[in-house]
Length: 182
Length: 211
Image (cartoon, rainbow over all chains, first blue to last red; front, side):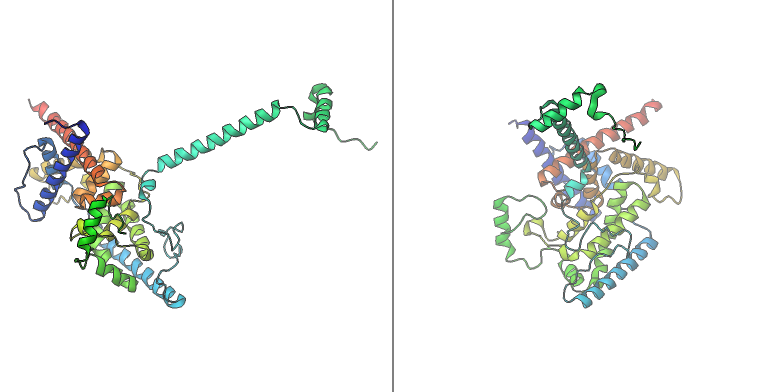
């Protein structure tokens, strides 16, 4: 039986996923035997084996760990004080002066974990912004061109334009000299 | 109505989860710690100790620099503590007993505003007190694996690091990356294919001069 291409890719991905579950579980119990489906691509098995043994978890320095623990304790104390002063709400307003890493863009009611997709992909936002500003610029240029080509609607405006055009050298655009007092 | 937790859930699965949910007392393994920290922010420390290395590893693999990883880790935990009131537990029985939606929430914070600044450097993290030949070969293998992962597109690299380094389930990764579980499976499968090709090429190049 043959699968359509997309279904087959999905099936391969599921096989890989099941194998990784087994591999990581075996890794946890320090076992060497990992049950494998015969349909699993040997290249996938090879890469998974290498990554499971070669990608180590990186631990920060003890000094950093304790320094951050102290900062968190400081923030916790601040939150307790704020809660005691402000009533039952345990959420403290973020005080950027407490730590420069606290982002004042996040208000106390905002979830800092919200919408990770837009932050993983900053580029489309920038691209969107550029497109928007370009579109605005194009719209602005089109509006100015339309206004310049269009005859004025009121008789007074038409008269002003006619006088300006009848002056030598372009009229209205030329600077008007202040009249001398003499 | 139960909401999707880590990723997208089918209506059937949700209904099944809701039925089983009545019999499961604690779905999220961090529930007790999170509730304690909500009552008293000073009780956040056990959560911090539990996830420090994981968050730091993720940041390091993402940014490729220890100082940047420290900054990102610090920011993640400070924001998590300050905004703990915003966290909503969303565990389902389908996620298994060891699932932690707090961990997913924490990593979603860590995943914000990440830009790789330097290539991954295996030599910076693999301890090598005695540089004997065997270890040198092992170090080469590790460096090659790190390089292969470092060359992956960002979304594939993130998925691989979360799966292999932080040992997360597909459902958790889907929650962090904001994708469906199926999309994450395909992402990891393709990433492993790329890594296999890359490592195979490296091995072939190493073998060819000896012939």
